[in-house]
Length: 215
Image 1 (spheres, helix red, strand yellow):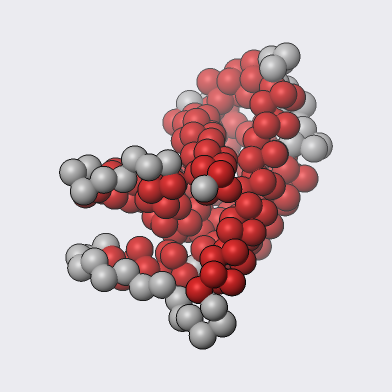
Image 2 (tube, rainbow, N blue to C red):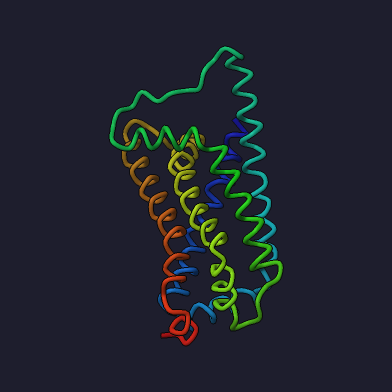
């Protein structure tokens, strides 16, 4: 029970971060000067290192706790037990079932992407005013653009299963609100997944001169 609670809490904390981060990333596409001001202001905040430590703890703790929970559940069901299957019907259910089965793969891809992303744009942080140029330089490599797009798809797929799992583990999923919570969680998963998949592509397709000039 305690493990499930912390899996949910760390997962929802990461979802909140993704939503805020996507808002910041969108500025690079729609208002480059505001994006540069936002990035420079953010990195001057004294609380940022503490927030990054907390997010790193969540990013590492979430998969480790999930792996431990999966091992405990597998041992409880026994070696002959097959994977759990949903009996719900609906247009979303095949996608939700796929998302559940793909959790180990989508989570692993997201961890790989996180390490690369931090190495490219955080551990060697660009100078103030050069954030967007650094992002465009990274995305200019086709394999990087492909990985960024794949990570966006993985995030969306992961969240289709993860949002519902989180509210269930927190005891918030009840027959009266189950349909609304599932719809809201899947809508959020679609929004974040599409955002993180399409924004890098849009940045590459938009003329770099206009972006860097703020037009």
